[in-house]
Amino acid sequence: MNGWWKFHRRMRDHAVWSLSDSQFKVWITILTLANHRDGDWWNGRERVTIPAGSFITSQDHLAKESNTSRKTVRLAIAALIQIGSIKANTRANKYTEVCLVNSERYRGSDVEEGQQEGQLGANQGPTEGQLGATTGECKKEEKERSTYTPAYNGYGTWPEEWHAIRELIKGTGALPFLARYANWLHDLDWWQTMRTVFKSCPSPLESLLTDAVGFIQSEDYTARTKKGLRQKLRNCMEFAAKKRERGQPSLPMASKYPRL
Image (tube, rainbow, N blue to C red; front, side, top):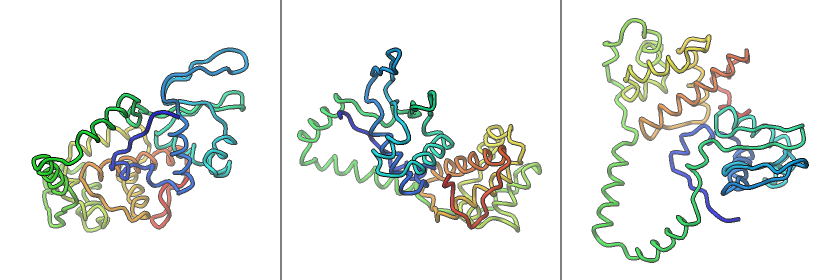
């Protein structure tokens, strides 16, 4: 099987990182089985084109390939669909077409692979300048890592309509996790964007935020960057919104983060 898949370290901040070990194994198996390029498949009546990033499978086949159970595969697919990592269409209860969302972000080409191998051979023994540049990049990244200011009091400038959110972050009933990163969350524009994103959800934004913090705290998550923290909160609020829209009870603060 040609080609390769690539991962960024920010993957640790994505909801997929919170899957159980066996479900995560199914996710990796899906990545390895997805078409590297467009291909054809015979469905018994006609030839169907399966695009790159997709493939035809069944629960039994995925269970065999991932060395897990059919139940694990079913739960993993449900979880991956909910967090927006894959799409799946079952045809006549016989087979399923699985499609990776944004598969091009993971996929590398044979040409790129050859180029990287060539560059690796050509670049052995990096120069002092290259080492200096790498060190500078590492220092820049380290500077962006978690440094919070619990005493930050800028929330006093927020309009009264944001009182509920403000209280969860900096008020007398503040959630410890949010208070810890108060300096990173003082961006009213971002919260207004979140209100727009979840405007169709019948539950208020502060309720979704409370549920999200419960999910996050249960997995001992520590934010490394402001961007990673916000993405984590958004992912968990999306999960909470879907559960509330379906009338399912939210997970208690001590329960495990989304293990569908």
